[in-house]
Image (cartoon, rainbow, N blue to C red):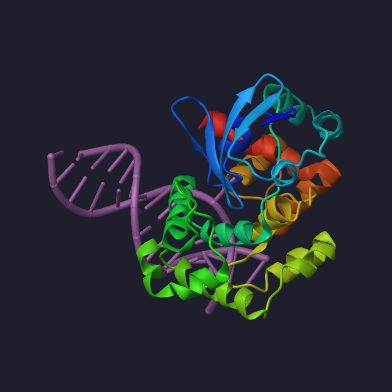
Length: 267
DNA sequence: GGGTACCCTCTCGG
DNA sequence: ACCGAGAGGGTAC
């Protein structure tokens, strides 16, 4: 199946916003979207997709409604450095990940290397997820609870308790993700932080990558570094994140992604 | 509001 | 080669 879309798969799938993509020897990307194991191959005008049974889900995942030229024009107009970064990295898109998967993976993404995040996520999928053949789906809360006796095999460290409690609250219905769709960005991030293991940074990541709130500006150590060296902005989380949102406006999340990716190249 | 410990793994310097 | 120290998409206390 062919998809026409302005996208560069390498930075989009490899920059760390989603954690289940693997680049293969032939240059294609293998990942799991819902219950499809898909293989994506870059073309001049988009990509070729193998294994996809739901084109609408794929379009949703890639946020095909985002017009990159419009978005980039807007954030570039606000800052010459982001203008240069976006020009240097054409086709970098934000993804829309399933909220549960996004939330659960970012709860695991604390105080570890990006490399190990992917390892933990894959381990959780391998232990509890539905078998899809070559890969497994991201597990549902119920699947995690059913197999929680062997959760320690996933080597989540101090995140294990948080991960388990998260699954319990979702499964019991004590915490529901769907109603958060209708909330404002501010209310959404406040609600998310009621969950153990979710602080301001994870809440912003889930708001951006899961709930598609493009105004979110998650600040991790790399973004904090970029904000300090490029713009002289430093301070606590709230201060830096608010500065990013104010500076870049409704598409601050895209600006964040370009800034993050610039550090990726430098590394 | 700021300072620390935190599970575990990988990396790096000796 | 082997080992100990350090760091790593932050959060809870």
